[in-house]
Amino acid sequence: MTEEELKLAVAAARKRGEKVVMTNGVFDILHAGHVSYLANARKLGDRLIVAVNSDASTKRLKGDSRPVNPLEQRMIVLGALEAVDWVVSFEEDTPQRLIAGILPDLLVKGGDYKPEEIAGSKEVWANGGEVLVLNFEDGCSTTNIIKKIQQDKKG
Image (cartoon, rainbow, N blue to C red):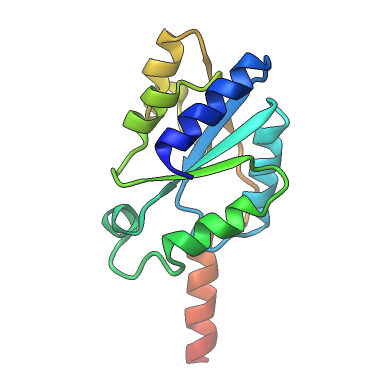
């Protein structure tokens, strides 16, 4: 979905009185922690937007060996999840510009962030929206999965 298509879909959802939730991430190797997190985020509203880092953005943030899965594949997998309504990509290191353009009713991020540290939080608050941090499931990590695969190849 393009950014413009997303804006139209969000406008239509708002006309129907639906609460729009938005989150973002790389979602390189999708695991149970991601699925649980996205399901929990979706329960907080009527529609869930997942913004995904482009391949170039992921490489800048995670290093030259990432992403493992290209953007198109990551978006297909995310879009197939029941909890996810719309998937959109962004090229920047953070989705701040995209979030400011969408202005979700609720911006959600997983992990140990403080709400004020989350990209786009100031814009969402200024528009009367909420920002929430959800806990990740312990032991679920793409980086740990990659390390285990590398260890298994060696041993």
